[in-house]
Image 1: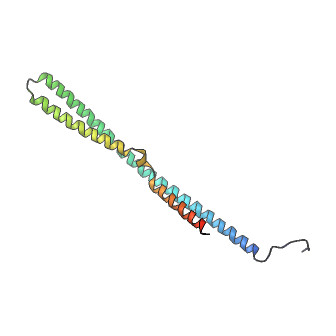
Image 2: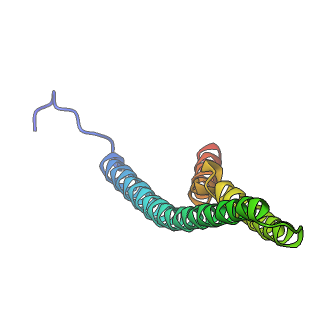
Image 3: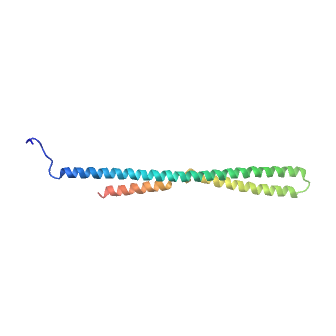
Length: 142
C-alpha cells in the first residue's frame, strides 16, 4: 500500500454495512406495510361495492313498488269514475297510498346507503393514519 492511500478508521466499514442493512430492512418493511394496506384497501372496496349492489337492489325494489302503487292509484281513479259508491274508491286509495309510502321509504333507504361516505375505505384510512403516527413517533425518538 502506498503512503498516499488513506484507509478508513477501524470499525467504519462494519458500520457502513450495518447502516446499509438497516436501511434495506426498513425499505423492505415499508414495502410490506404498503402491500398490506393495499390488500386491505382492495378487500374493503370489494365489501363496499357489494353493499352498493344491495342498495341498488333496494332502489329497484322501491321503484317496482312505486309502479305498483301508481297502478293501484290509477285503478282507484277508474273505480271513482265507474263506482257509484264511496267504498271501492276509498279502499283503492288507501292501498295505493300505503304502497306509495313503502316505496318511498325503500328508495330513500337505498339512496342513503349509496352515499360516497358510506363507500369510503374507512379501515384503510385509519390504518394509514396509525402507521403514519407510529413512524412519526419513531422518527422523533431516534
